[in-house]
Length: 338
Image (cartoon, rainbow, N blue to C red; front, top):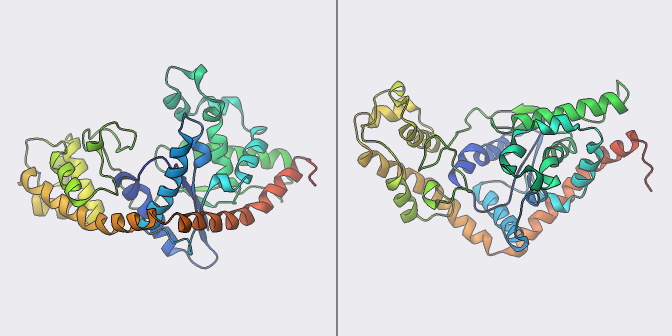
């Protein structure tokens, strides 16, 4: 089993990133058996598909390494690196561009969402972004890719590209690419905005009060939780009572995700109580969980030499792991290399 996943190094991680993805990365890393491995990368090549500040991208890359390690990603157990130090990602994307089809990319919803009404003004990199995502996982013969609802389409495209390439250029008994399977963690929590229970928690939201950042101190966390949008009704005594109450459901979901308790257990404790009692309790469990992560992050953030070394070691391993696939791809296409 080989798991590959990435995250863009744009700004601090927030609670939604941690509970929805990073915590499960740590679990997968720690549960890997002999012969299996995890590769986690910072998608800095993807980041340049949108307007960006180069200095902020560089700083964000190092901060993201610090955040991931603070959350529990162990560079000695997993391969942690940034794309830019592994040129094979960009090379393989170009080689796969001959296999990907315009019609496939035209159906990708992320391009439509990010380009908005100015599709003609969007970068080519944004349009071909999904082909680079395919290269990210196919390069390492990934067997499994953690996906949420918003990434299923991209994994399907990666499988389509891999299948067509194998069909077009490989013998039936010697395919170049493994078709990766989706890995949906059993405890992946979908965390919504503290200001709008119908929208995902996001670092792009202009309101800092919409999210809990992993670097927030205890006072900030308590303030954000107490000001989180809720409603006037008390918490129900069972899960059915949360239907139609998006903000109440979100706050209860956060509590269950952090503590590991079931919804029924939480409502057994707080059912009939108002948010004036529930929010302080939620704030306390968040502070207890995030305090050691925040402290470790601040410690790591100031050690740039160690962060650079982590990325360099990870990139060296990644280049070795991807070399054979890249060589096979060139060969299958009939390209002559020195």
